[in-house]
Image (cartoon, rainbow, N blue to C red):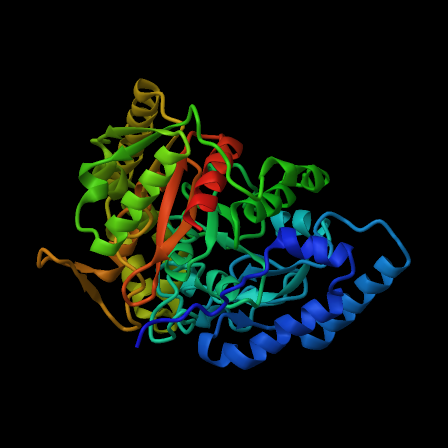
Length: 458
């Protein structure tokens, strides 16, 4: 049976702000809509943890009273947002889907990015499900809203599933090897992995400090950028930001987009290749110049990121492995066991390979005068829950985790900003995702390109 779109007319943050400002909907009605959807669907999707309906409705009522009194609302006043459960939210536990943290104290304060976004007036709906310790791509027990027999991706699976299912308009994710982009791809939502180091990681449980990145997921590029501004503490810039993103067609005239062959074109599900080619044609129609290129260090960058994650994750969880290995899930335990035995020479070699990758990709962008690259986010659509491998039309088989991170990890090594965009569905009705990769610290230009392509694809 084909998958079905769980939310065919998704609310955007932009439209919802308009509807709230013009009283077409109240914050209470919006929150009631969210909670009703959650009550009807989350037993199957399982995206949420620790949702407090009474508190949420009281908060919504207080916001409506403030609006009725004509008090100046903050830029994202009333927008429901989820927080990935490795990120501190004051008054909530940060369990990280770990048995060893089930009795952890509630956070006394927000993570820096959560506090910054709170000041814009968002309502935090609750915590979203993550893969154990954010170390993987399955996000059990969460399931994909398009077809609950399939995984949502990870490790920010609950955040992507909540948006796809209509139970949040935005959410926090983290990305170390693809954990914002993979679930965005598999669940058909939009995600931004900012440039490494752009947003504070204070108050976020670590996986790999050299690669960890926090960022937003939402239904559109513009919505992601509004959340991104809020996370930076620049909420005052949100009201004027919307004009940057026209709601009809946008131009890509003068933009040079690289389309890399080799590594990024190998072992790809045919429907993903078709969606990629279709997006390239859209970009050309909008005036972009398409540049064929090859990044020779892509595979080495992917290996470097993978090794860094293994070793740094091993250091984070070394003590737990020694004291209570039975409290670790199989995926985390195996990752940590490998990470703690890898010699230090492997780590230093990975760091050096990462630096070479950053230099070679910078050279490639400069030589070809690229504004962005366009690549598949994942080579396949969402695998079934429990599937340990995926197969390709050439007969090759790849372990599921390796397949889903193969095209995302190189960009963690380089630290570049990446927008993950929905790009249609496969013949089973499951979402396909593409990624636009920008230059370091060039999120806004990347967003302009991503927005134009988003309009064309949709």
